Length: 369
Image (cartoon, rainbow, N blue to C red; front, side):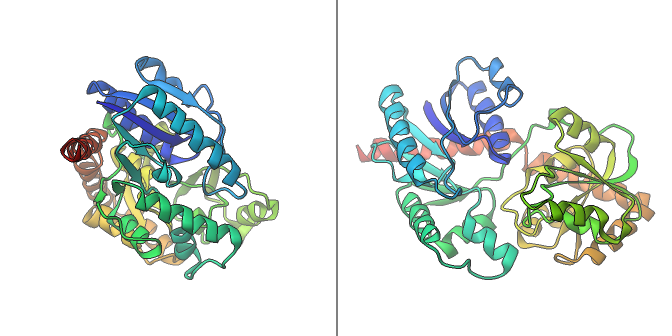
């Protein structure tokens, strides 16, 4: 089988694509990979060195959630059409909505990783203000979804969000994202500390909750600190004289894996989270998980995580204190999270699920021919 996959190099989608493409290649699937957004760094593409059979084409076209991206998307769609004509894949796996409406006659799967409207709802609690750009965005997403032969999402919540805000896919599937357990070490002795991953300026990740109250143990926040409004970052650092919160900035994969291995607790603070790879990585490192009480985390983690009241910083502090003061309970939650992640969120399971879906779509195409 030959699959053309589109990706972007900004955020967790690139990590997801790395796991997917690596798994497909090991199963003998031929992959043509096209990326958009920033041209990736050498570190970002190092994994492709071991996959010479993957035909990778990097571009810097703007992404569909960016303002003033329409012209780039029109040009990039023509480029994808040209590549399809050149390499003749049997299936398109599209990680952007826009390309779901391509004119080429090839079965297409659109994956709904996130979207602007559901993000706005989760963060602000109401519909985003109407604008010319938002009207275009809604129409673009709906057109891409309606043009897909199948739509998948990493959680039932995300698939439902697409149905609520745009349209219900004719053929919808939930395929959880996955990570390779061997990339993480669950056997390192733990320090009594908390870690969380998220951009400081991202209201959806809201890692700022960890700085609202003095944490009972040392707490590390990993993620970009760059924000157009410098006053936000300064205000966060100085809030209430917080002393136990340490800002680590952006970390390499190896440094983050080491930090997760040494940390006893991971806090998932997101108020908007269609899936969340960082909690999976923490669970595979045998961290106890504390999660914001939102539908996605309840769906994905169930009894394998400990929850704090939705978006409540004081409740979060109390739950951290509870687990920090009770090593036995903390170890129980760490083991639950570890076993749960290995069973449900492995890269192998994710790749197998996509392979099954690809075969269904290919069968439909051949049956209709």
